Length: 337
Image 1: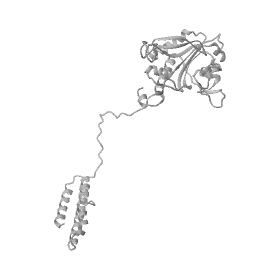
Image 2 (image 1 turned 90 degrees about the vertical axis):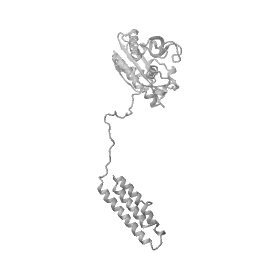
Image 3 (image 1 turned 120 degrees about the horizontal axis):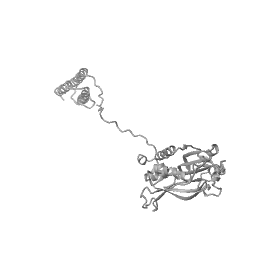
Image 4 (image 1 turned 180 degrees about the vertical axis):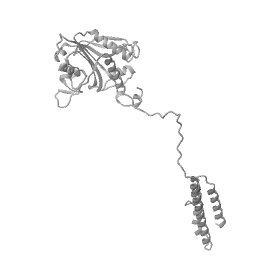
């Protein structure tokens, strides 16, 4: 190690400092020459290996060079403009980034469509409790004590209620409540959640229904057909509809209403089980016994009622093959609606 080597380091450092364009360059030069394991400090650490007579001279020269480089760094730093954070350029003509947003659940969408149709047909929307008395849920609707629907394996009874309180199995109890509180004419639809002990790809222990009731002095089965035809043609856009005789404890006569299969168009497929038809809802003229149970005189009033499952309509309208998809909160499924 000689004086010439130290002098060469000083000259090179001063040259680089003088040509530094910004403070970042100065910092890199400082690290290169004055860092713990760089140039001058490495020389200072090696002084102990020199002959004793050369140590003072080389030590003094190395320290002097270090001070001169530090002074040159400070001087050049003052000459350079202060560093500033440069904001990235913004192209104001670019469209904004896509922000994800929530969607209305398909069941809610379907319910809103159903309700909207009946509002335009002149019906009023009413709601009622989901925890109900068996007298409203069964007795007033002619569902006798030995009816299978009242069994524990089909109905959720509230504990310690001795079978008197339950989770409603349909929204028809609201119709009973309204008829007990109001005199005809009535024209109502009742949307809401209902509960039954079912759980498979086509049934859920909790699902949604919309039931309707119209009561007046002069009401015929033709009125029922007209209302349901108008409703189904609105939801399924001109689909063919048929009415089949059926039985419900609270209507007489009763019918099942079918639509032409929306999948195969009536030629027969797995969805319609080869029949070409899909069962869509149940309906009928209100049984006179139900009117008696609410204090209406069946000689003075006639009416019709109907009930439909919201999930079923949504499944048929959109070709969904598993009801459980509605309740699993899979965004890949929900984002399609």
